[in-house]
Amino acid sequence: MSKTPDEEMFVELSLDDGRDVTCEVITILEVDGKDYVALLPEGQDADSEDAEVWFYGYKENPDDPNEEPELIYIDSDEEYEAVIDAFEEFLDDEEFDEM
Image (tube, rainbow, N blue to C red; front, side, top):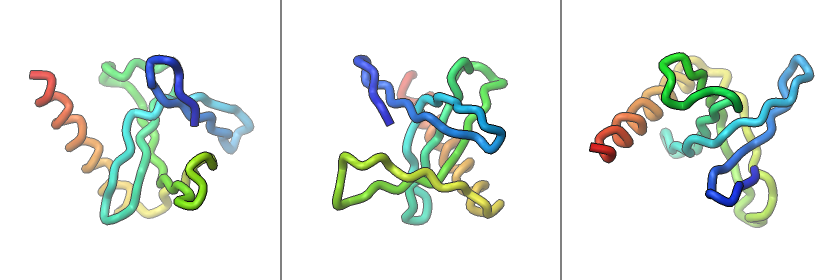
């Protein structure tokens, strides 16, 4: 993950079809004691209703904070739904804070 001067964080993903996609890290969520990351692919507007957000498990090496975090594919529908619920709660909190 890398940061730009305005503190946004980005991650480069290599997709199964061979494409590389740069994504902005929206937030890191904790669900049932595990960390997950919400990513917004570059070129999408976060304020758009059509924005596609990608979710992955997120794991840092506690022994080496400089090591790149590991992103883990979520293959359980139940786990994925729990992450989506946590993300929607995050969005609701963000909207409330803006009022």
